[in-house]
Amino acid sequence: MIASAAHQRPHAFVIKTPTAPRTPKVDAQLASRGPPTGMYFPLSHLPLELALEIIRLAALPSIHSRSGSPADIYAPACALALVSHSVRQVAMPHLLHTVIFSTQDALDLFVRALALQRHLAAARSRLRLDYAAHVRRIWASRCWAPLVHQPAGAYTNYGVLYPLLARARCVGLHADALHLLYDAVGGGRASTLPAWACRRAVLAGHELRWNSLVGTAPGAHFLAQLTHLALWSNGTPGRAGGRVPGWVQRVPLECMPALTHLAFNLTSLYPNKVSILVYALPAALHGSQAGGSTFRKWIESDNPLDHGSVIEHHVDPWVSKDFGWESAFAGGEDDVWHQARQ
Image 1 (cartoon, rainbow, N blue to C red):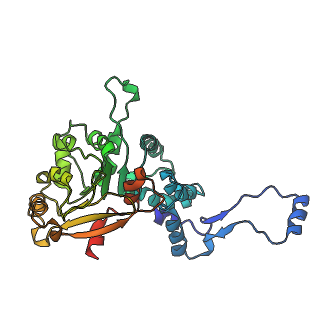
Image 2 (image 1 turned 180 degrees about the horizontal axis):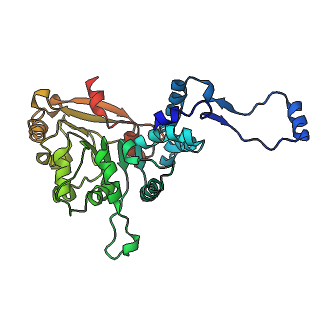
Image 3 (image 1 turned 135 degrees about the vertical axis):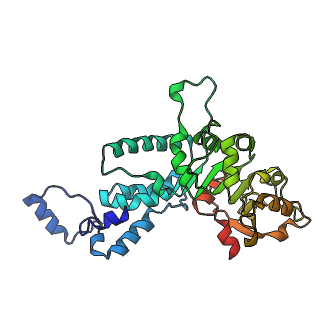
């Protein structure tokens, strides 16, 4: 997509404010003002690589917004996508790289956007875009299960998200959004996960409920393929005597034989930082299908902290408590494996 945009120079990356129709009176007024002071940024005058890098940096999610609104992290990228078709082609892959569903409404709007993309693809519109080809990380904070007596027309089919989840590098879910995974993979009707390539997951929330995953064929298949799992719980009161939190004992590690990396928080998210214990299986044991059972032994050992590395994640003071784990995911804090190696 970026390559195709690159062939549209030299005029593709000019950004300037539209002007009113010129008349002799307007010309006289402009002449009296002197040189123009409005914003004019001729990206087409820059080397192509530099212009693309500027757009990339401007389109990255802005996780440090002090407004407290999760939607603000995409404001720069959305603004860029409206500049021109060529700028949209360059900006959209960066916007879609990390997708954050903060609310149920945001999730439903994205599902509608996918439906629109199917129509655009059928019409061969130049606005068509393969979202699944660009989404690498997905986080959902809310996804409510339908009520028993809810009208069929009000039900949202999250199965359209399956291609995105299957090809994502990492999927993050709050406990209140586990229904998204359950529904997207077939609601228990499927026995396997075809073309499933996602091997990394983040699960967060006060109560991590495992029954909907362990008790269904697609859920169990999802767990069995995981190589990296990060667990963030609000139910962790604090580290005591070098022990791990009690809720970790309830994690069904035996259902995750392919696991090579495991991380979980030792302390609560607030007031300003959280301690995270990171386990990494020795390279010699990769592929042994003994990851989950090995991590269980480490957790239940006399000195569980000796088997891993403890890193500190600092929490931005202006981030609300409800947005804490979501903000951490948006900022790449789920990639604790890299931090632990440093």
